[in-house]
Image (cartoon, rainbow, N blue to C red):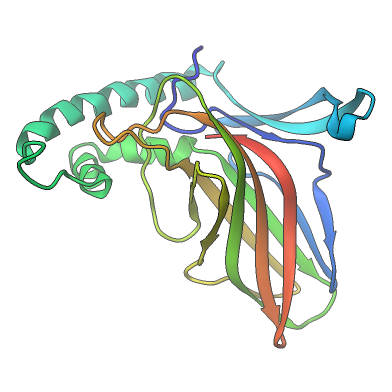
Length: 243
């Protein structure tokens, strides 16, 4: 199968154990939430950092279930349906150079009206990670923001269409640097709380149905909490995700 994607085709987390102990008595356990279209396997890769000798290193890898006809065939059917909707949508919009071009949100709304089933299919198939937080105290924790740093991005051939929703859907930036997300509603918990994040790519092609060519992201996620006026953070460390 090619790397043509409406959404993420594979997700890799490199060289990090699933549990991270955070200062100020906050632990984080994270992993794969969406097991309908993804599965986890273990892989090895050489460690070539800092000019060190190559030694094998274990990492977690979350792969798209491309071998499942139940997942793949309906997904590919929706790809074709969305591209056909784009052909119908364009003649109803202003002529390029003669007016304002339609936005991605307008096309998404059009698709949602004409084919809501495919919007649901994309959301169901997209990669989702869970993050479980456990505090050793009974104090209240409030999630203030999520900071995601894009360390690198490499575009693949092909492309895909993605819905964007409010809340904890994450539209990754393919430009290097940090982007801040303000979760709404904010997670508030005592002793235990959970966050799930669903990932999309912002590497859109506006003149071609707002497709987002799939690519490999190297990112780091940091959750910023407040408790009793203090700031507590939890970080994944760098990992890779194909979106």
